[in-house]
Image (tube, rainbow, N blue to C red; front, side):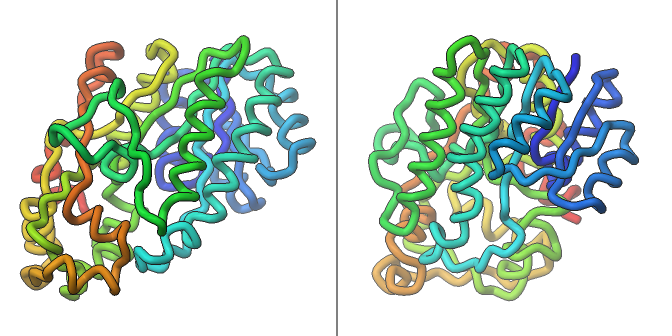
Length: 315
């Protein structure tokens, strides 16, 4: 297939491009810089320098590539503060890519005659409804309110999901990735989250009962290839097999990165420091099931549990 990957030089996009080329696909991949284009070219794909918020430039690039599939992996996460009270501010550029960028790519895909669009979303513990059981499926609704610090980010996620799955004439596939870990991500040994955990600056809040779903970035890339090639239109969680509460995974993670055992902080004391949304992440969020993606595409994670991944793959 001819595949256009928007966002081909990020931690996930760069891995995805290599896998698609290895599978024999004709891949065009975008970057914002000439250096990024060269990196894409080096994989055997065709690099394209592109401002994804320039609608005319997006249209020209996609039409010229004549893809069967357009893949949306655009994010802007290089300068996260680590302050949960600033979630929407930290994600402001990514939210534009999930709204304006999505609309530009969909319009270009239709003009180019692409049959399928596969787009990155983020479900997992961030957006799942926080009532009922600890693990949600794609049939469960998203939360009504993630917390005042993250409402704009949730709105952007809802936009990309609705736009892609309802686009006329397009097979829309949305991938709700869990929290990434591994090289090039915030949760790596030298990433922002890894450093915070190692220095003892990431406490267990309340009972640590918030359930998170994780995915190694290499598993996420392999799942994305499976979705491009085999998934029916719709929404899929891309997570490992082992949703787990903060009280279980955080102390284990601290051991793996050589950090201190996390402190325990009451929710009332943490709220002024990490905000309403931060307390929810620690105490009330719900995990996700990967059953649909595995059943419909045959994908299996290399690291079925964060326990395996944290121990062997955080670099």
